[in-house]
Image 1 (cartoon, rainbow, N blue to C red):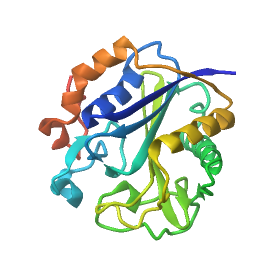
Image 2: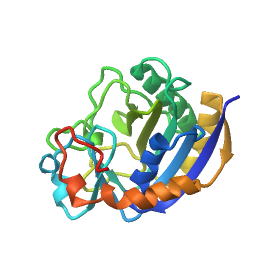
Image 3: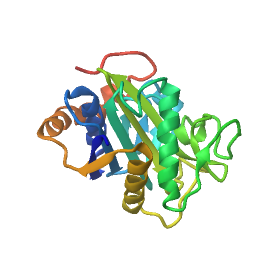
Length: 246
């Protein structure tokens, strides 16, 4: 059975969260990793190619960072953020990209089921949470998204680099002013949901998890990169291909 690390980094600063995600792609030799995390303060993360002017919520006074993955903006409040990272040629990432989403989302649905949440793939349906003009991830959906009661519950994206894959996403607990109409899990808290997802993902993916702390190399990477992820230069430079600020 493959061995994976389990990291839990609660209430990290937004830029630090993004820098630790990046470290999963940049640092050679890291073991495959499942990570659960939350944000303090609440923040808005823009997709890699989004323009600030296309996201009304980005002008509402929230702290804004830019993710290293594409897709729409996410309001990181009342949610659980998760990530899986590992070699691109090993499960669940090997094969076509769409297939990796199917595997991960099926495993996540199984994990949510252990918490009594009956999520399923969207398929061809239109969702109540599909709203035009907001630029928000949870107001746009695809066939592989996980939904609950006709509303989007999980938004996720991938980045592939240096032979590794980062798949990260948000599981909504409650709606917010800039993420209306989304699925909700009333009374559920992030850490309790993470514990259920830990057990469910371990079984569904056939992996053995070992609790760990971020390595010295990862923490050094975070210190070096967290301010860039929240910098105006990075946040405002969306909408075109560019370098990584190195």
